[in-house]
Length: 386
Image (cartoon, rainbow, N blue to C red; front, side):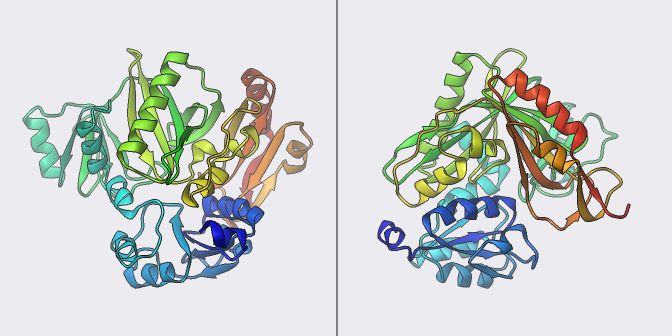
């Protein structure tokens, strides 16, 4: 791969052409890497900048397999992929990174939890159930008590496939699920860790996140996190332990809870670039996207030194607005020092849809938050017609 990179003949395949794929391509273009994306959407965000766009379903075996055969190295920016096709590509000698066997484990939230249990990684108590009857029996047998969190074992993302069940009156999700005890959360943090083929590992600075209770999406995050050096060390050691036990090459986002007793526990992981790392594009010497490329191409990992504290805001579609997108207040926020706006290029907006993000850089997190509040009040994602 390094030889092809040096000769500018490397072709990187990316499954899914959403905003993460788009940002990865922007980074790959700096090294003259040709990119091919697989996505069913003819207007996906990455289409405008990819070398090639193959329209197709990433859940279809033949589509994924044939796409993977035509590139030098295959990666992905989401988890809901036909895993059998990836495993077959690996078996047939094609390079798929991260390893599809790692993805198979992470795709299934039940298997994720079993992995943590096996390796003595702190996480909340859990149980796996096939259906609503199993859940009712688990409650009856006092294996679980209200309240608890129900997560579909497969297919959930961006808050979908997750339900907080507080009583028998709440509606259960339909399908094989993983139940976990409600954690009394004090803080939610994340650490992104990278590992290359030589076993070199580097962590990005911890970020702290706040969530919108209605959408279950990150409302904003800031870096560095407001946690003790001891908790930073615990979280970094756990992130490193997970990626090493997985023997994973690539980029892994690890989400943690810090509970009311001060214990750091793992929530879940994602084997790809992540919303919790968008700020690294401007605020860290090596962005999460460049680090991913370095990891999967077998290159030395870059420095994760923080350049400046930052706050990252997700730009979400406003309530009551569906249709052709328009951005209100864009000129005003672009005039503000240290405000970096990323628009994903999605043509259609709808309530709570991720349409972009903004990173605010300042000498202190407090100053960044003050400016970020101004951005929130000014920049709105609306439609031309309500």
